Amino acid sequence: MSTTHHHSLRKRLADLRGPGTAPRPLDARALAALAANPGCRRRALMDAAGVDKGAVAEVLGAPARFGQSRFAFSRGHAFEARVKRDGCAELLRLLGAADPGVPAEVPDLAAPGPEGRAARTRLALAEAPAGSWTLLDHPLLALEVAGSLAYLEPDAVAVAPDGRWTVVEIKSFPILDGGADAQKVGAAARQAAVYVLALDAVEPGRARPDVLLVCPRDFSNLPTAEWVDVRKQLAVTGRQLTRLTRIEDIAATLPEGTTFDLRYAADGSTPTRSRIELSQAVDAVPAAYAPECLSTCELAFHCRDRSRADGCVESLGRGLRGELGTLTTVDAVLSAAHGEAGDPADPAVAALRRAAALRAEALAAPVPGAGVPAQQAGEGAGERAGDAACR
Image (cartoon, rainbow, N blue to C red; front, top):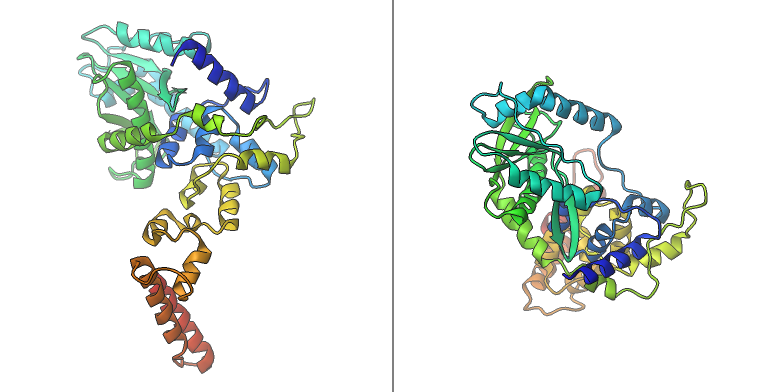
């Protein structure tokens, strides 16, 4: 992308965000969530523009309540400081340094602006001396995503004496009896894979495909570590990110004057933009809602309400959407199940009609239960059988 083109795109994204509004950084966690749902143009555009989706959701009346509590955030910072104290001696030990008592070189990465910090990080990686350890504390890496630059900040990147680069992820969830929560480890692996992709953009092949995950051991605050192979996450995330529609193409489809600016009052405390006007701007960008969005996106509740209002089967889950084939709405599914529409040769239609027939048969054959009136027992058994058949 040429410099002129890049500046033009940045101005367009600034207009979408709102004049004078500082952009929210697009971090690795957001990129991993975006890669898991590459068809969502709404999130892609708003994240690239640095829109505060949480504030937008508040104005829309559909706030999402997830993320770290202040206590967990403080605990995480305290644990990271413990891991990196005394010249990062503990971190060197976990990395497998032959002599962790020898302090590593920790270059100063301070520079004005994200572009300066990213350039300083690239220089520090290039100048790391061979034969000794170099630790980059909170480096800044740049990764182009859908035509827009994202700046990513891992907890640390270690340069080994052999010149290999290792991503270090420091988390506050515990490793109990040698194992950690699989879901949390998976989320950390997807996040770390984004950092490895960004390092590959600096120099392909230098970054290790396994990352060091540092966590508290058992119920103490003592650090321990696991090596996590992220090759699978690298392949999936890299493939999904390349599928994202270019941000400039998404922005070009929007009506003239579309903006997500909240238009704060003079004191900076209260959004003055109407809910209807903001909702129209948000809904002008197509979304791809799925139940998984509820744990990863601030706009999930708003998108879920819209998806349900439109009768989209995606609101029931991606797996079900895939099984239903050409039946894309709840009304179409019900019509097919009741024999009012649909091709009987379609496997999805045939399965729906079979399920509906089994449910009707079960409801017509009451089974008396102990101490329960026959009619109520029959209805309960029929509902259970019908639900099982539909599943």
